[in-house]
Image (tube, rainbow over all chains, first blue to last red):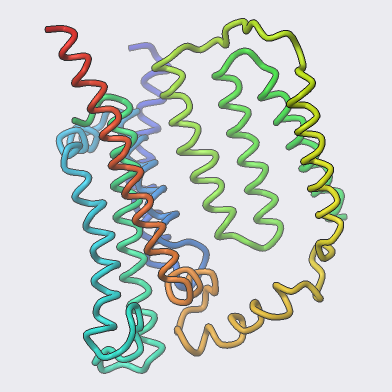
Length: 141
Length: 183
């Protein structure tokens, strides 16, 4: 291990928690400022890539989880789809949120549902792009 | 003065694109494309679209560069000498013809930032006026993505999922065939 290698690994390892925090901020703040599910998923993925560069503990965990990451992809898409069906169950159209029986005004229900949908998007995107990265580097199975 | 910034950035984009095409070192090419995406992100941010700028910086400059570098690592770094005899006339004629059509069509588009453009006159104002009251979301882009156009977004999520599954199938199949060869 050369000296510059140590610098790269230390910095990459240091960046990971901040990137995860920034990704969560982008995901949950997407309805107020710039950002949303897609961007948050990509930022989560770059945290995983940096962890792989830094060879930190998180990378080991993601190596173990490599084969299971497609479950994340399905989970996000299913969250989105089920939220859509809630609209039908409550007597409206597919993906119509306004008739849901929640004790909030209509715009609050919309904001809650939009945030849940964004979380689903973020789960799918981060899971699948991580899976692509881990598969190409030969770390997934 | 903003046109000066935009002009310099656009000239840089053209120079970088040509440089990325001409260089033989594919690693240099990938790095140039990363810088290209960063300049695009600056242009988007300057056009008051932070969502697109964030996506361009994260996807174009970040993930795509990583994937390019991984692909270079798996194949070879230097581009090999090709056998083609310079510029071919048939494809050049087709490209010039299509470019001419596009240039003519661009003349019919509304002026840059024009308030009379159809996007600003018809559909855009509706969202800007009612999105805050209807959805309770202050970011209009999120309101359009996750509420007004949620079918679209559901399709996009499905496409991302399908891409991931396709790449797994591709790579794991190749790995299995390699394993068979070893036996």
